[in-house]
Picture (tube, each protein chain N blue to C red):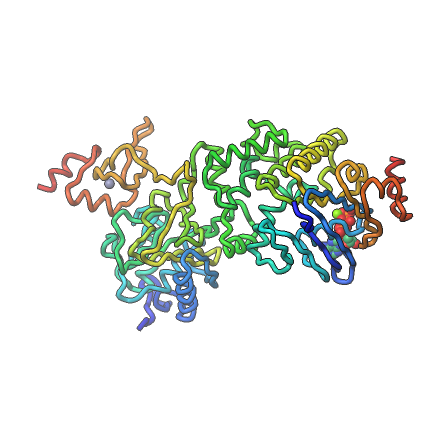
Length: 258
Length: 302
Ligand SMILES: Nc1ncnc2c1ncn2[C@@H]1O[C@H](COP(=O)(O)OP(=O)(O)OP(=O)(O)O)[C@@H](O)[C@H]1O
Ligand SMILES: [Mg+2]
Ligand SMILES: [Zn+2]
């Protein structure tokens, strides 16, 4: 590990026509660090995640990333081929809706193996054993390897998404509400797994959630968004135990009331 | 040079040579030239309505119409046969609209329009084979979005194609794709060879003939110029293999050719015969026989 940040955003803004998505966002993320982005619906969390992950083009500002070769690059300067390679090797993206993060008509093994084949793996048994290994890491039974995700429960689909992303050992994973819509017990198991993988692989994570309990469990640092801007940020425990902004206090108290 | 030809069956109507007007032919020829310049790349073209349904290979018909000259000798096959309804209709179409000579003999043809086969006789320099293509996009199976498949081709991003073969092995224990088996052309573009049996894939590699592909409904033309490398995709531990047949052709005894199963009766009787009818009859005329050859046919040769 080095002291240089992995991901840095400066003056990031996104407008959808005249409507504000988010603005004036600065952030740095180091290797192995988990950052939670919280805030009410429409506050700009997904927009920010889209900007950081190059899925959206910023209206202003820039994002830089320290590549595997050590060079820090402005993401806007990457060629489409470089950007795609980054997205499927050094990055992962776990989505709220599994249909957007998985190929629903492709077997679990094919879903996990896709990234390997995309980077040139051409030995079927090797791909399969790597996929089997990853399925077991995310607690999916090996005999489900040829089943497609349509036959999987919500929790299994999320775990399969995680395996599909982690198979190339990325250093940075984006997650947008990975646990919402799941039963509480299923959520708890998934959070446990994410925490364990983050630790084992030293993953850096940017996780968007409206659930402060998720933020508290997983993240080191937290950013609170309101109306497209970051209004408060800091160490997760500090912000949640001693929120300075009235808006954050409201968010925290509504959790306590829940 | 391409004088209007009067259709004998419809004396009242005159067609331009080979039906299409000269402007349309020039547009198609430009697409063909571009396709030849970028082997395996799908070139969009303004596909025209032809006086036959799309399922009849209007893409191939338009390509043939655009390259046909008065001196050409045309052969048309469907599944290897010169005399199915489809093959006869297209052959008659060009006899009527272009007045060109036609043949069933592979060696004598300068242009071969085909649906689903490459002839058994080796093609020669100077010959052009025109394939009728229903679905030109090999990535369609896993990625229905056209904008995305174009981007994948542009970036030579073909992991998805490998996923399709992976799925095949996972489901069937081997690569079960037997038709329209994807190939990589000159190390660059992945291409759908049209629904020919994978048996024919090796014939595309380093062929001395020009290979043109036309998809009418999908408005795409692509090409393999002579002596171009064409490699069938596979895995290291599941290498590409062509179909093998246990028995020789029942009529001409040929081996190493693609055979069709013919049901003889309702008691399970069947035989395997050459799918390439010209190849089979040529061999029979040369005196080759198979297990089902009638004895008098041998006698007839004196
Ligand atoms: N594609 C879009 N076109 C127009 N406006 C958009 C688009 N996406 C988001 N917005 C707007 O940008 C603002 C921020 O939306 P965003 O989706 O980033 O919020 P969010 O915090 O992720 O909300 P949620 O918790 O509901 O997912 C909202 O006002 C939203 O209406
Ligand atoms: Mg959102
Ligand atoms: Zn035969």
